[in-house]
Length: 106
Image (cartoon, rainbow, N blue to C red; front, side):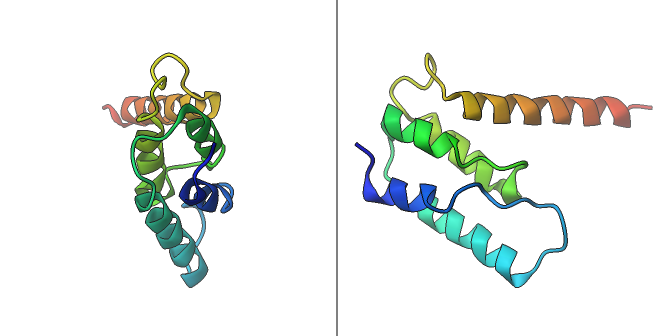
């Protein structure tokens, strides 16, 4: 069973991207996503974790995606059965960060 506050967050769909010019609409979307995440009491259920994982966008969404990931990790079986979308997102960012660090070396 998915709680109403989780359903409210997932109804937003994918998190907005940091790419492009910041504008008022983007700022409002990011603030709304963060505020809705704050309403979700921890821990989440495994079912909720899988639903939340579908909300990852293409990047960190100004830090909101990290909050989402940490929320998902509160699910009882997050270590053994982490949602594929969450694992892909985290692994992708880790790979990007590693590649950027390697590129910046003298």
